[in-house]
Image (tube, rainbow over all chains, first blue to last red; front, top):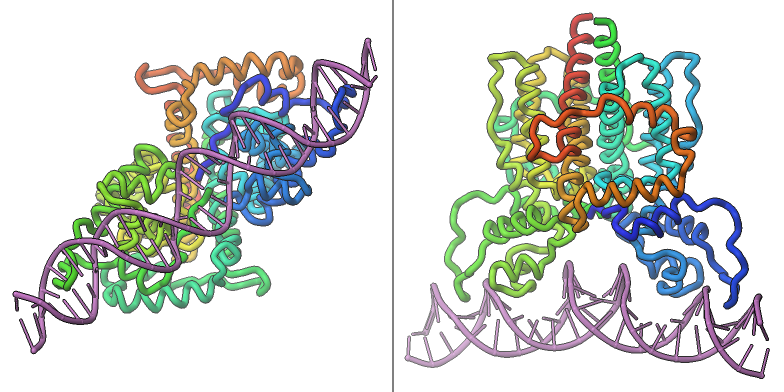
Amino acid sequence: MVVFAAQGDARRSMALLWRGTDPEPVRPGPRPALSVDAIVDTAIEVADAEGMAALSMRAVGERLGRTAMALYTYVPSKSELVDLMYDRAFTELGEPYDLSEGWRAAVTAWAWDLWAFFVRHPWVLQVSQARPVLGPHEYTFLENLVTIVRETGLPASRLRRLVSTLVHFVRGSAQTASDTRRAPDATGMSDDEWWYARSAELETVAPDFAQRFPALTEMESHGAFELDDESVPYLEQEAREAFTYGLEVLLDGVDARLRT
Amino acid sequence: MVVFAAQGDARRSMALLWRGTDPEPVRPGPRPALSVDAIVDTAIEVADAEGMAALSMRAVGERLGRTAMALYTYVPSKSELVDLMYDRAFTELGEPYDLSEGWRAAVTAWAWDLWAFFVRHPWVLQVSQARPVLGPHEYTFLENLVTIVRETGLPASRLRRLVSTLVHFVRGSAQTASDTRRAPDATGMSDDEWWYARSAELETVAPDFAQRFPALTEMESHGAFELDDESVPYLEQEAREAFTYGLEVLLDGVDARLRT
DNA sequence: CTCATCTCTTTACGGCATAAAGATACAGGG
DNA sequence: CCCTGTATCTTTATGCCGTAAAGAGATGAG
């Protein structure tokens, strides 16, 4: 299920997100063996490896040699932990883009980086966008995109819509791609096994498929994609091709509108 | 978390999805008071009203005046129930589109219908696309789209990518829009309250925001959207505008490529 | 040494999906 | 008519989850 972000106490939440690097003052009590950073990093490891569904306070604690409850000393709740994970992950997209080849090349590079990021960290796609986390690294990531697209010279209102369109398109595409990649592990069944069982069943249960869905049948039976690389599963390459195509169409559309 | 679809036994799963309307033969044992349809409909009501997170076997059972375990007589598991909900919801998108105004008008109508569908049934966005449910109504919905876009005359391989691009774009946009709409209820805080608390905190925690994120600051401070309709929240109208714009850009791109 | 404060563990609660066992209802066969 | 096999539905129990509450033990300041 979608994990709602930014629900907690605004002051504590923002302080954690924007906390600087200066060390905590020494205080009475046992010296902390953990840290917010260690917890967030470990939680990201768990979520990367086993998915958001397997991310539990117990699992993170265990990986750190502590109980689940020990984490609550550092982090107010699981929901805040997810916020911190989210913003921390965006650190990977912190570098600005080269604009010397023009905005189009830079947007393309940005889009692929974001796509790869989502596939690397599929759980990020499950953090709701409704109440943005508002952390420094997500802002940096957005700043990078805005810096690119303002080169088009579009007015601010158009720019906002373009930014949102780009982010949504990449999000949507990456969601399928990352689900595809995770499916064999998550379900314990390979793509082939799965497809074989289902399609055999489909034929017995809907023998009139080709008559009921003629356009779909025709589309699916032509122009199958050719594998360049045997090691990457078919479905993933298909997703990648579709992403390439969609991105080009989108940018062609932006170009076409700039010229009129 | 993403609910993985189509995990169960293929035979039983497909039989449930494609089951016809012919009544069950009369068998010994107490007459069933429930039915798969009643359970699926009730589950959709729960998910629509309270979100996927609140969808539990207990909740559905209770609404039907039964225990959670009673549902297992009709449905093998929660995951299969979600598959059935998913395909059943797509019944709403079963009507073919009018092609007399050309493919572009039809795609636009299709996209808005899908967008509205996702906003009406936000939980649909949480069903993984990796292992498609393969039910009759989702196929009908896809058949409708393919029937429209094949009017462009593009070859099958392009068609597949275009279909995927369109679905992803709508999915991505609708996700933000539906999260936005659900946020106040889900978090018990209005958009205004939330934004007020966070932005005040942001100023104290990052006083140098405008220097750190100049492009973003400039974009956000210009060309704010004007509300046409006071009753629809600002964020939702913004999402709608961005969707309109993105869809037009995308279709302009398709057009531009058709002409060369 | 005392005390206040902090870390971390233990225990407990109410929620979840669902396995297992049993109570009850009913059609068909005698 | 009862008997039997099959079906529905409930009860109970198991092992997960987030996290509240209470307390054990460590440590710096006085």
